[in-house]
Image 1: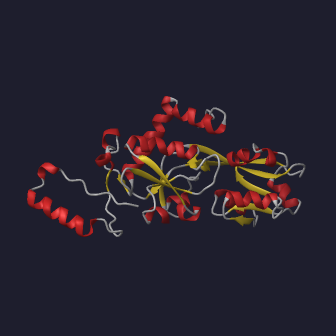
Image 2: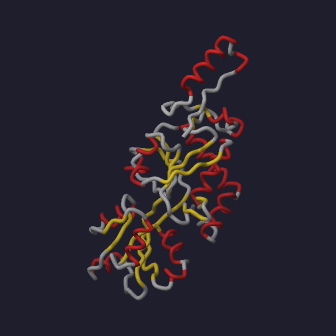
Length: 287
């Protein structure tokens, strides 16, 4: 990504300094090793409340995510869309920039590796706030209340994790997720899949008998006729999870912009409209 040039007040730059700056720029200012950043206010973000936010790419709020994870983020007509995308767009608007999305492995997101390596400014991937993840990244205030669900073939007779264990069925889960953590703590050793599409395929092809996944994702899958005809949600697991937008630790300026954007959206009705757009219902009153 192209680095931001350092903002200078032209009125304060002498003719000699200006010539020197131009010479330096001509000699090597555009090299790939240049990693300088500047505040969002230099790109117009200051007028929208951006303050001293540092972004890795000029005019962009770069988001790391893990595609697809419908309805939170997925590709439609060549464009990445979804609930998370719309939430981050609120912060981008405040900064006076546009959102740029990078698809990356979820393990690199939750560990903070992608943020620390300068791959992105924020991480939005239907990511649950946990104490373990807080060791590696900072989170925004919660923007979504989540829970897990079990999905299996219709007529399986499964209504709980206890049934899965009693029937000796093979359980599947997405790697590096809280769903995996939850069932592991319940004594299961599930088959792990790299992402949600592979997990669904594992169920469809009989590699596993039942899978655990975030409830909104399961409900979105079941809306597809070919999937809904054969499979169903067999149990809801109330895990009390909440999603947050991730940032590099210590990035308080960006955290403030994102928190303000979420808070404002909740108060002015924008959040409700985005929620209904992607889930078809009003958000729970407890959110």
